[in-house]
Length: 516
Image (tube, rainbow, N blue to C red; front, side, top):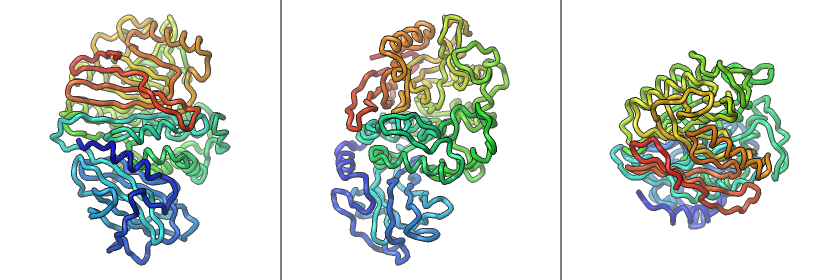
């Protein structure tokens, strides 16, 4: 593994903001072939920065956006990719089109690159250039090197600042994963005011959400430094929606949902599957150390049981036939887990998989999580217990921090009112929100502490909990262990520092957790 600390420091120091401003080490002067095309657009700006998404061993999807206004119709850009941070000796120089129908977004498939290598890239118009981005391709298939992955989730824009992303940008990582809720359809008034764009109804207002979020320089900095893998959860459209319903009646529900998906694919650096244009579930192999499975818990999801209640007893929650994943995705995941040759199987999961009991009678916290889809959860975790070694689930959505052990039913022996498991299946790390409201934001310190103790009492599979902190997680996986380092960042201060609040580890072959 190439040590990248010095490079990262230089790129961050270069600044991530205004289009047309070259990096600190000097703007490249190469203007040949496609890069000197007479038809490159003039006056292009790049206010949403650059991104490299869904890395492969031979490349990644490179993204930028040129807002319409300085040109009519489509706009031509050049893209340059090099192993040199000054972009000299490029390995790719091509023209790309920012299409009007995609609101000026570009998705360029960079291919033919070397595995496990660091690359730099830039988009160029006739007289302006984008910031310089960097990414690392996935490790060679035979690599046994450690893997480091950053995870974040739930970043309500108005509720806090994004110092988390400034610190993520400075981490030494293979890639960054968003576990869902990259944008919010609604808004909670906070330190950054209020977003009046509530429940977007049409493409322009849905697009405006992403433009607002990407106005943050720390978020752009993170994207500029690391390859990125986004998952979709619910707030990208409507809170707790299923494939056919929302908790509130909404006219033209399916049409609006389709517009939300269109916007997500437009604004995210993801390739599309030719035979299944809305599919997002996929796996990434990071050498022999990790295979990362990214799943979709929303697009194929049946309606939540018991009116999507919370802290309730709900017999229908364990009814056979209810599905979170849908049959094709479930079959794909089961086959992938069984056949994976990686030492560790890491599941990027939008909604909590382990059970979460909130009362002495066995009340479950939320029906929108895997607690509302118990039969399918038991099927997956039973498979993991019997045929999959070293499963690590990393989860978003909850806003609080949890670390726990997965049993085949989702519940450890002794969980009140719920079927205790008989076999261990893996471990789960739930990362805190970047800025979205958590339990500690709503309750006093004493009440929050009492809630933490209650959760530990009713959930013997739960080994660590913090309902006060915000931040992100870094998963480091070696041949022998997987360690989640929880980073705490104060969301109320734009220049907040970072601390490592907890480290929780599982050793190979154990499916148990140690809080370090």
